[in-house]
Length: 80
Image 1 (tube, helix red, strand yellow):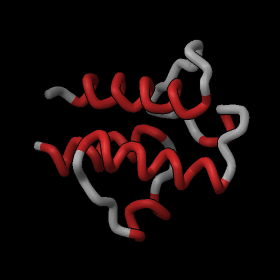
Image 2: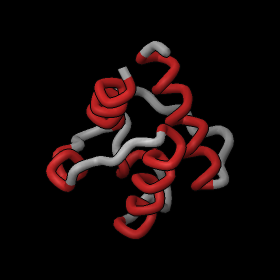
Image 3: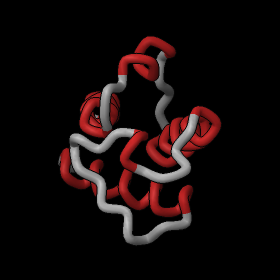
Image 4: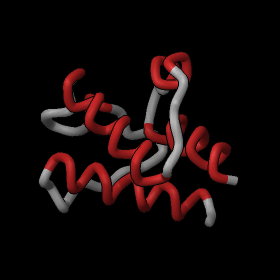
């Protein structure tokens, strides 16, 4: 799996969670860029990604995510 595949899968997860299939995710996308992505939805995002990729994030990883690109890098590092 490539990093680009991970980004595409994260985009699909976000589209499902927010029920908006027009969401386009880039490395620079942040929660501020997606309507309804608040702190409660952030928990849903994290748990959905963990389940999908069969990984676990450490708390310091989650709090360190500045954008989707940081999240994708961490996911890619865990599955590679």
